[in-house]
Image (cartoon, rainbow, N blue to C red; front, side, top):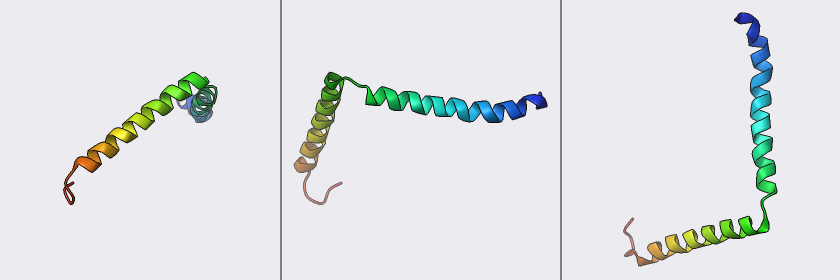
Length: 61
């Protein structure tokens, strides 16, 4: 079992790097429609939070 430790020191970071690269590439390759849907959702959520903040009486949090 101890003979596998040097191998694990290589495999662990390689797998981590592969996952990071996979998600980075996946994010960059999103279609314009997916980006638009994501932006609309974020805008709607931001607007909703702003509306909730403006409806609160001053000084209450």
